[in-house]
Image (tube, rainbow, N blue to C red; front, side, top):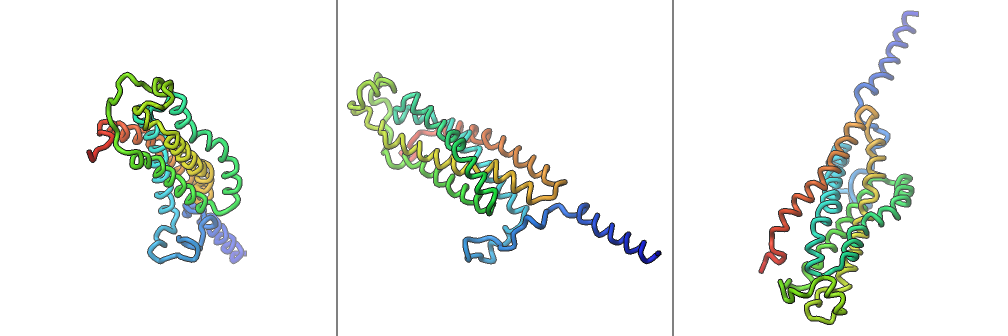
Length: 244
């Protein structure tokens, strides 16, 4: 009887100990390591850890908020002036991200939730990076900006002129669709963040620790837009072509 009682006590300790000490859910950690396909160099395996994953995901959250909710909104007035967009066009540019997320989030959440979640998040980061580069590309492909070529030709006046005036040469529909496509890519890249990302945090960590990491994640989602507005406001004081 004494031996059975000791064995029972040891069994209880063995069951309770993981719940008290383990902060990470081992069943959620992949053993394949970091890499692309079969290319998994040893130098990248330091990132095959939940803490490293959270650092990357939080950075993704911070940068996504700064770009989508901060820099894009701050730059609208400058884009409207330089490319002589109408108010409707600038409204479409800024709303394209939300419309894209609305259309794609259900499909991305369903397919991503039933497959390799970190891989979906990585693809989202890559797509959003492409969108950000595409959004900045008109600055380098439309030539230098000439200030005040016709002070009487306003945004609506340029449209009424049928874009035949030389002062409307920068009001190119191609540039407008570049911004639309860039924000479509940005919306696709942002869709997995608050669906698959939150779900994977909950899977990755112990229930006692997951709320802490979720709290940090959502705090940074609020800091990102604030940082974007601050950075964008600072850049508004810089001339549109700083190399001139």
